[in-house]
Length: 598
View 1: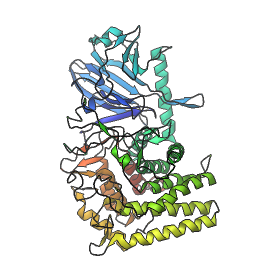
View 2: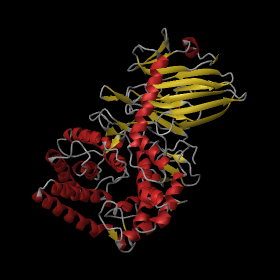
View 3: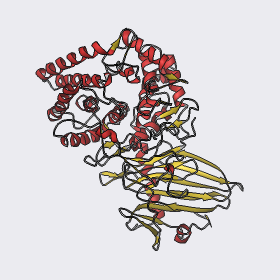
View 4: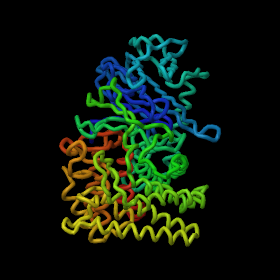
């Protein structure tokens, strides 16, 4: 179990926050999950003690934290050297109200004494403009205002304002609440209203989880992963971020610091697919709405690999100099240069993300001819760019190559369009897309198989091993029992594994040799082992990966090859998707485990 990134996430589809083991909120972007971090102590700051919200218990010696069962509500219990204890409850309200989901940009923090005399200090220190602006609080009767150039926050509380504003120690004799949100009055009882918010939020998550089609084994892990994915979806537009953070490095002092608070077409497909496997199809429906806007915004048909969660918002990459970085390991990046790259796998991922709309009879609005025609435009670009050199799915910033995975995703776009056409009873279009799929597949097989290496390789020129090749059977490009695929899985296992986990690739890239394994690749490897009949090894790999989760059940992007600590942005949708996919694949069925007792 990794404690390196010991963070838990709360959120509601509008905002999200990360909370450490002591109850400190050290990351929260405002007014949405890709906004200015009003709490950013996770990434340092102009002062060592800024950009957070915590509760200091005098004499504290112990802290424990847990999620309320099957929710995104966090409870932290602090205990001091005299045995006094208090409980902190943190959540972002989310529940049904007036036939829609109420999900305001609001954090609720409730503090209550459990035993003994709890002498506490509340330290509420937001800052704005990526750490450059530390606003002084302005007092109101029952609130404090923090005004910046572009945002004003209001903290409303039933505590004496002077204690919070001046950070004075006081004895917590009864439950207290603080609500952080927009600069608007709170026209109701804080205690009663927020208690109702908590109950309704708990009920929402319980209902959402109740309808998940979870596997028999590893239920807690899958449920936590599913909730984490849900927190990464920006419900207003349907966009899905790759992670809730920016600039947590892939490896110590590596400068591999990226902003993942944006919507990659590739990552989002995997997120939609995992939630669909669990029966949570609403995220897919929202994402299709998002994709329609994205596609309409590109009259040339050329899609970027990544977009803002609000389509049309620029993603130019820049630095935030006032923030020193995670553990001082800068730079802190805002935006992502990958938006300027050519990555040709995205067309296939768009089609795959939408395909279930045409096959799933549970959906109130199925995919229709209009959606199919929109996707055909995407498919046309997939054919056009199938063999164009690109940066590849690993977003190499050096030279472009003709990547196997990108071409295979173009094949997948044509293959799925042919299947959709058959469902829609459009035989001419089915034949059209089948012909393109066959032509692309034939050409890929001509260059992607390396007879000398005895493996598929990642590119037409100077082909190397690449973990994305593990997906060839999963995508249906080759059969799992194809000797070429079996040999590729075995070769990748031998050459890309480091201390039990899989690298993306072994060679140098734009920043030298990678130092950490890429977590989703290890999940892909476990899935590939199962496909070729090595289930026991697959389960062993999977349980090893489960042990790498932090105490809150979250995974980041990478695992250190030596220390096995987590590195990279968190929670990483890729990694949580891998957990769900692999658990669903490897678990005993309910019938096997529950009814037959095997």
